Amino acid sequence: MVLTTDRLIMRDFEESDWPAVLGYQSDARYLRYYDWVDRTPAAVQALVGLFLEQQAATPRIAYQLAITLKETGQLIGNCGIRLAHAEARQADLGYELDPDHWGYGYAFEAAQAVVAHGFLALKVHRVWASCVADNVRSAHLLEKLGLRQEGRLRENEYYKDRWWDTLLYGLIEDEWRARGSEASFSPDRP
Image (cartoon, rainbow, N blue to C red; front, side):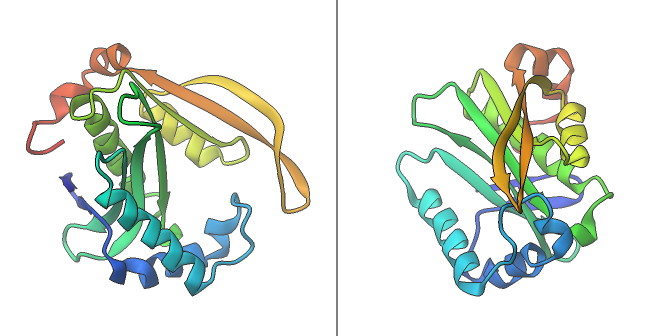
């Protein structure tokens, strides 16, 4: 599967993508809001292997796509939307980006296309996401996409010797359409 935007090509993962993923997942800035303290080649190969398994599933319910720069083909992150099961009418959104590419709007561009895929191709009614409350950039991105904060789970995750709050966000299809988001995408370019 391939989704394209003005600056990005988002495509299914290939087995050979793991070194690029290891590169950015090993960055201390990336690791700040994850329970991992480091990443190993074996762990990242297993993660990419999971993405490959999800791609081959029938029916396919998980779409975790490699984010690549259109001009160079460089893999700079991933973004995806996942259904709990084939008949699900809601899906969760997730994304991660190489810290060297933060601040350029790539995560927003990728997530916007994936959300459109969820509403237009997967016919979901609701897209939801969560993020660690301290991750202000991620919360801001979700809000910019039109997701509304629906809740805060206080001290519900423990890692790195502390408790973390988690924010829950959601976007209903009618809200997404009311924002005019559908007009930005055509069937061949979600």
